Length: 346
Length: 131
Figure 1 (cartoon, each protein chain N blue to C red):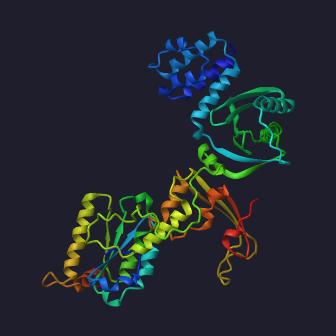
Figure 2: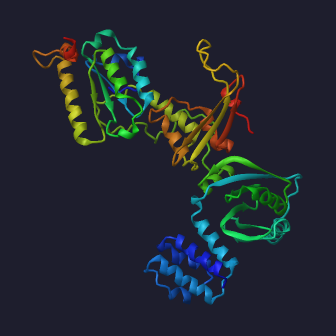
Figure 3: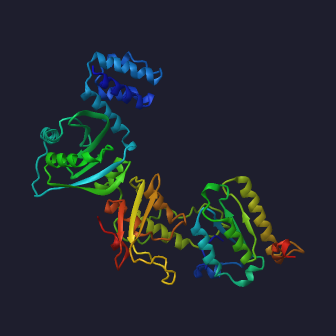
């Protein structure tokens, strides 16, 4: 077995938390059940990984199998990576039957014709997701297995989720190969990024609980704004205001859990507005400013702002439009008129 | 009576008893909270500022999360001749002690403590340096 492959397997196993190693090796199913029985999972990880490498040696593992283990690791810990969303466009309306073999062949063919040194691995999952791992090399160097790109494609949709490696230069090639393999004619990056792959899927596949603008005369009687069990000596003066806030919030966010995003970024290219006498900026050019909201769970925190009394209701549409516009990166330019109209897609 | 801002909704006017003490709660983690209080102060009748108004700053235990400077709040207290109390609601001991202080102040404001009136708070507010 190649030394580099052995080292790669060893390092991959080391990344896995000790309690998960057995399950992951079972999912990999490269080592037999009998071989797995011989492993002592109670020793330190260094030793476990050495043992695993030895067993792989027995089975003559090559880079292909090692790559599959890496996909399994990244599929399990997918939220460690940052994912971007790409949307593909079809030229015609033809609904072609998706053939996985054809897809793989075209993808590999397109990449390999441009770059000889690549490692391409596929793995399909039950939810119709196809995971692709690509390790990139150069015409003179073997692929760097430690900085691969991952692509997740759901065959019945025009969306692709990419977690690129640091080498941005390979991105156009990757996109090209995808269009060819998926039978589309164009691909563009959406302004939507997050660590939570499932949340990105929820947003583009519209799987989160959206609220439709239906009017309810008495919003959700069972959801009490204030618990009535409190002290009767306490009088809430603003009960109707609180109810209005909850109703507005419910209209905007719905009642289900929100998709998990960590950032919203607004690039402002607007003019600085100040008292003309202050003369802060002599030149009449746009004041460049970047506003970034970050949170472990941005949409849930936005949802809790108005009930907590931290902001006025209703919230700015720039914040609440994030899930239905499927974007969390915005460019705001100067425009006369309503604020929601002033953001322009790049 | 708990309210999120002033003025109080007019529809409950007839149900409201006389108000003896107004405690403005300012969350030190929220600039919005200070702004809200400043805006609400404009709706308070001047007679309340003779000892029947108090500012309560909460959340002071979390030093890293302060958004408002204590200086700003103290200036507010000076401007309106009203005491400023600081407390941390998340700590039970302090919460209880603060509640007891407020109840004591309320007893004085309602006239239940003979010999002491709300005006005493105003005179206690004067800085000893001023004399």
